[in-house]
Image (cartoon, rainbow, N blue to C red):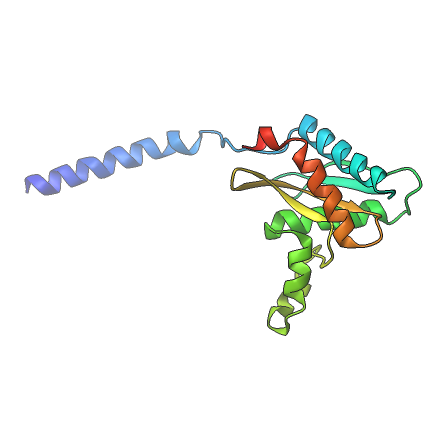
Length: 163
């Protein structure tokens, strides 16, 4: 009987505290504007050094556009394609090049059905430790693997802040 009372009291305590806990704001890591700008600058610097004109897009933890820049002399489609690469990297938590390799396997045909997910290199997830907090997409270099080198160079500019 005493055990039943203790269990009932514990249950009432939890139920009484639940509304207060439900009202607490979420605290999560995300890409800041300063970080997005630094990543974009690093990516553009690398691609310019390599002789490529590119556009760079950063998406936040939710896959939403955080920042974008269309490089001088780039084709009109590069901003949107960079966004899709960044979105793919964030939502799949892997590079868009890795997604491309998975899409080649007929067993993974479902990946082609996910809206806004593309299978070409140039998208890299941004991680704070192991937690994905965004994605960077680069488009305009002749080949996704070259875009990915630039995306990684951008992330390297903020590596200390991501530890």
